[in-house]
Amino acid sequence: MRTALIIGEVVFGLALMAAILLQTGYTPGMAGGAFGGGVPQSGGYGVKKQGVDDLLARITVILGVVFAVLTLLLARFW
Image (cartoon, rainbow, N blue to C red; front, side, top):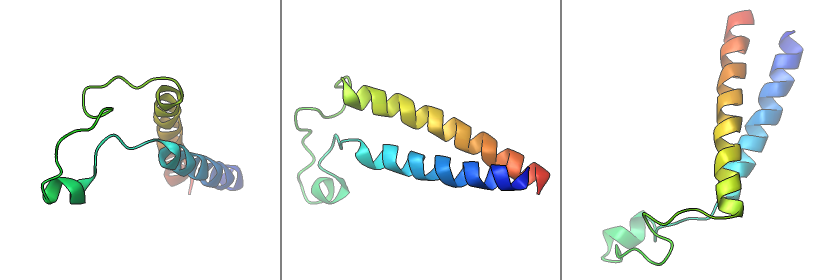
């Protein structure tokens, strides 16, 4: 049981990292905002995500929930 939970934790953890890293950024970043570049570009705040970005956002939420549940189960059965 523990082995399956550990394997699931690793697999879903890697998938969650990949889903987060594949998403596009919407702001110029903290450095750009700190040095006077804080004007949102097209695709900034308030712009609805479309296509692949929307799909990746949903996948990230689902993977995050599954990862959290696996973490709690692993802590329970350790």
